[in-house]
Amino acid sequence: MRTGIANFTLDTGKCPRWLFERMVALGRPMIEIIVEEFGPEEFIKRLADPVWFQSLGTVLAFDWNASGLTTVLCGALRQAVAGREKDLGIFVCGGKGRASRKTPEEIKNWSWQTGLNQIASDNLVYNSKMVAKVDSALVQDGYQLYHHSFFFTKNGAWTVVQQGMNEDDGSARRYHWSSQDVKELVCEPHSAISAQTVKDDVLNLVAKEGEENRGVSVDLVNESNYLSLLKDLESVDRFSTPYSKVARIKTKGEQLTLLDLKGCEFNYHPVIRENFSRSRYLKKILWQVKERQPENYERLLSLPGVGPKTMRALALVGEVIYGAQLSFNDPARYSFAHGGKDATPYPVDRPTYDKTISVIQTLRDLIMKARIPLVEKEKMLKRLGEPF
Image (cartoon, rainbow, N blue to C red):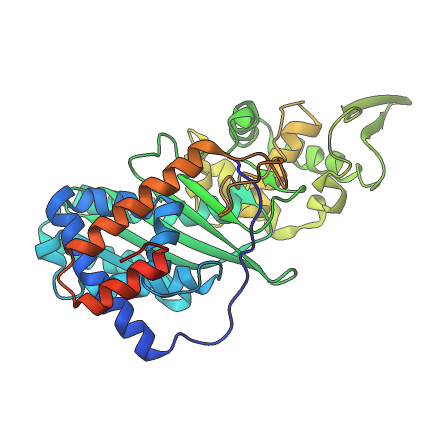
């Protein structure tokens, strides 16, 4: 669902220790109640819901519309379950910056301590890596990932909350994943994406309408000759006029139209800024990929060295040369506002509105059940907008 636009700005500085410690102290009993009543799988599933995640962060006293809510809340939840992971059945790995790169090692460590078998452990590590790769290589929206938190249970259920930043406009974007929602890692896999704005020039390689293009990308590295693939890249590079919507190549004195974008809703195409044929690294990676012969698009993405430029090159060759449709629709489909009665800035999104009300009621019930002082309950309910 796409519900509009809301502010989501980058934070500077650090969360005060007194506030972080209080978030941990208040978050711990709420986690315990949810796990006790609904189980650990339900708790991590709720974290994949951006309405729930945002509401929980607000209840625990962080700014509702700031990027720091993601990193601080994930850190507070990790600290809240620390020492009780096995009892609660919840394990939290990764985090911000360097901590995110330790995720695979932490998953393996917890798997060993809990007796999780090797296959299940390897599967968790694989999904953690692929989630990060999808949001960096297949959702090319201009946001650089800097935070990756991986929540999982001993039954193998997992949730990922990761965040990227765009330094050009000072905004952040959060990506929510749940193993219970994912059917294919490379086809509309997100539970939701929270963003400040919906952009016009996003290359969305996980869109459902791009299924044919994903298939063509696999065929290009498996069936085509390496030299012919390089020629295709050179052909794409010739489509370099910013104001042109038609790609034409002269062959033996005749002009061949490869891509005609007349009537499209966008006036921009990412191919105008590319120069694939001069990239030695890209040529090297394509050679290595052809040697590996990946059986599908997911396997192609998982190969070492394959990143945004490789996937973009294959996708644009597939569109320009072979006519396989691409999506330039931003996959961000959640924001914090519900719209206005006069359809300003957009019509009221009733399902999301009702969902928010339900989340608030659930959080209120949890607060009332939590074993914390009455004064703390009163403060939390006020932040939630509820009378005590």
